[in-house]
Length: 150
Length: 150
Image (tube, rainbow over all chains, first blue to last red; front, side):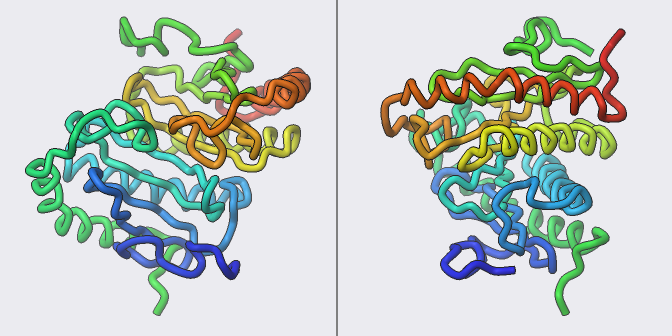
């Protein structure tokens, strides 16, 4: 179910890490946050409770899987999870690794920035992303209920 | 399991709507947002994935129950869900009814405010909260796995 004109129906919404038949995982290009991912539900639904209980569980266990691997690979100071959708009301879960040195910590990524970007530290995290994303792809492909379309 | 000095171990974190043995629901006093709730996990854990899969499901179905009743009672323009915890790393889910007229919409509640508070509209929502919160309490008490402590 797609809605013409919706940015997350018309486009992937970021760099595809995993594309399943129910949801996809994309890396967002948000300046200053090198490990900012989104679990995007493929069908156009606005609210989390527009999904039934089984789909909510499928979706949140994917979010939890992403969080688990972000923690294992990057040891962030905190992980932030959020489904807002005020501007783009198509269900997507932000899964963001936060570091004490990032531009906004401990503020939310949507608040005022607190300090300049630490380019060397961002580059270090960037260097870890290929292995992280391979692990993410493998883990999400192995989960029941979200096959890769053939 | 409590951590001395943690604001969500030492205090409720808001006006108690429902207190169960695994989690509680509180209404936060956040200026300009009359229906800003938090599902607070009682044990001190920092990340969503510090919970096992069964507890994650219990927690998120409580979040979904709160969202469902916010939608039924208040017809918000959008519901926002978030577990951030950068400042207070004790698992709590923000469940926030957002309205097109609120001070920040469509920005996140943590971003810059866009307009003055509409006191008459806020008062109208406030008037709906007693019935909403009675429904929330009844629904959460009826859920398996989170008995009210006797």
